[in-house]
Image (cartoon, rainbow, N blue to C red; front, side, top):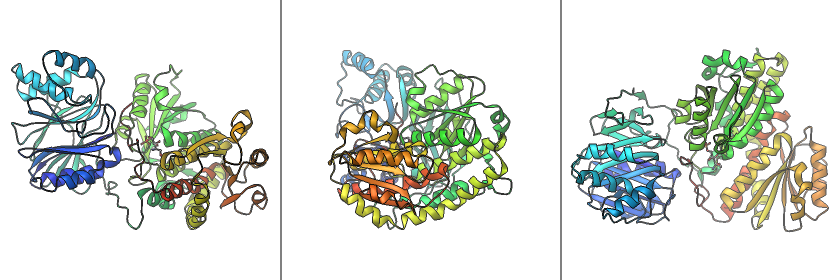
Length: 606
Ligand code: M6R
């Protein structure tokens, strides 16, 4: 969370920074600000658009740092907005991460007379730098000394008001990328703002410190030793996303569902052999043959995709799977054997909890794998091997197309593992064929979106709702409820349909509707019974059912039909109407769909 960008070069720094912040805005949008050498700083609460307006008269300058904030310590306000500076107005800092020992450092500085302006953890950084300068250290040394004092996570870009050219940078736990363009150099939290400018990038590692100017960059360890990090060509996947004809990114991204499946399976299904080719796993294919247990970790939507993966992998590959919320995994003492692999699922590839789970698994010496969308992200680089989603940039905070892609890739992975074991050629082919048919089935759902819009309008004013499903569609109930909560602020709970009678049924009455996912699958009849139990308590029901089901209409107030596919792949279809349902409710309520309150796209703090 929080996005930082710095620029040194011959194009106007102000435009480079503000444009960059707009690309990074999905990481946080509580406030934003910049500092430009010789020109000073401008800060504003709320969206980057406010900053742009406020800075209309500010000069361009050539070197500067900027930040868009997701508030952790201190309310969203101008005082708490970055850049933060020291009392001497010499050190200017933008920071992504958390200084965990800031209270202790702040107390120490206060005792020596430093007066703090903000409530943030970040402000200790410029104050510390200036306190070391006062003790006789030069700016660079003061910066290194400060890094030695702070504990926690950081992606930092720092400037000295007495030096108009250098940007000091450090990374520990929060991503930072140097972008090299013909007209200068950038530093950014991810490569989204670099897409239009940089021809190559340099990924910094934890512990790296760098000094950047418009013409060069030098990378050091925190001890001051030179470090070499190779330049990589800017990935073609990093196209800057545009909304195009759509009102919101969320709508656009849902509408990309079919293409996302096509991109995930392209060149990967070998239909004659009933298998799949996953280039990213080739280097570990032999190790994977020996694996008898997989722990899938992820957060939010990625975790729910993992839950679907558990069903598919266990059914088709016969490998035992556990799915764990990443933030819990690292605080347990999981029993890991050499035949266990950890599989991290993450759209951004930067989620701090997921990254830490990987690091914990690596410390324990087990194989780590990733299913990641963002090319070159931290998770992609830190796992032993992995599979890219190729879903393209996802900008809406609510994850939609990434989920579809994650489940698709998990199905491919299940076939990969299954064919290494006892999955038959016929089964492998059948899954492959069904996967190839999914894009046209998703298109047929999307073409009926007006039906969903109508249904959504009938539910938009409720205070609470339940979303239920069984087996493969239980995770879809969780995911559907998350989508509704996240963008429409309606209290929605996802439940296993079989669990209703163990508690949630008590809440049902005519004001408490339920969305039921009940495709024609092996648990269809059980689902019908659960729906009847809700009906008997006057609960209103909106059901997602399979085309051709002539019974479901009799027990539901509203029905949306999806095409038939094999049971294991139904989640990829059933989630689409739920995504649209949540979207249309939020839009009808006039909410900021792409940037729900209190959230950020990339959660880089624990
Ligand atoms: O980038 P990741 O996939 O690791 O992100 C994980 C979650 O933060 C993310 O899926 C979140 O739950 C979404 N906002 C849900 O729509």
